[in-house]
Image 1 (spheres, rainbow, N blue to C red):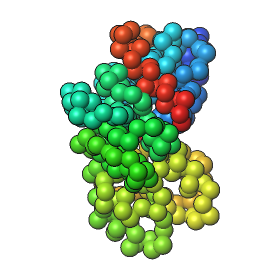
Image 2: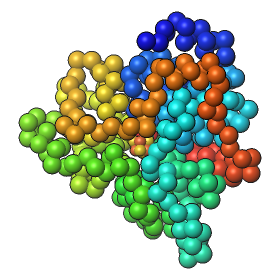
Image 3: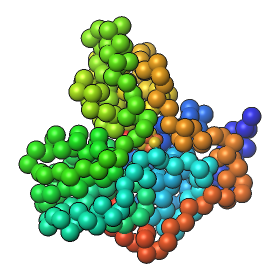
Length: 300
Ligand code: 13P
Ligand code: SF4
């Protein structure tokens, strides 16, 4: 059992701030200074003043924090926490596409490696992808690595020509539409709130599609009392905190990102004590990746 007082004392002594994604487990969300979606957390990371950031998320999130605020020490509670989707793009595909299309904008979901960001023109998150791409002058858009988010953005911007990559989030891709339809049958007229990383069949039956913070906001502001949720289970904690009297139904096959769940109170305490798992990004790579991230922050 981790002593909360001890952890908070150590955090103050180390001049540290804890950032947690909505998919981190409830105990970690509860001790975090900031909890949010990828976009919110990247904005916080860019302007944070303290000495150390402990990032209870996955590797690309910690790397974004380090790239946007290189003077800070960024610690990952568990160095193994990575995002599967980040590795589903071959950077040669970007180089070949640039040769094939003049006027190409390479738009990179933040769920990507630093190397991929460094080959891209602009980053996006699920919360700002439509806004950012709509502001690009380019007709041809190479959207990487997520095919599902890419198709979602393309539907909003029919005047642009999208080239897709075959990447996906295994957790969202494998949410089964039959399970969602079964929930709809059990709870008729209950709205289905969906993350854009979900597969096409789920997107088709969604009443609302948005980022994790978008889903939380929709559920809080809508007058309905019950919602079917198609995204990772960690979001349930904030949904229940924001609107405790409402009901949230998730698929029986619980969508769970095991990488996010590697963040525990024990390893948050451990990295605060030892300073291990510090993110490092080679300078040249960081400079190129920062351009794509900064452009996102400007356009969003
Ligand atoms: P959000 O930016 O919506 O929080 O999503 C991040 C993520 O990893 C979804 O799988
Ligand atoms: Fe990556 Fe999917 Fe986990 Fe999000 S839920 S961090 S996209 S593997």
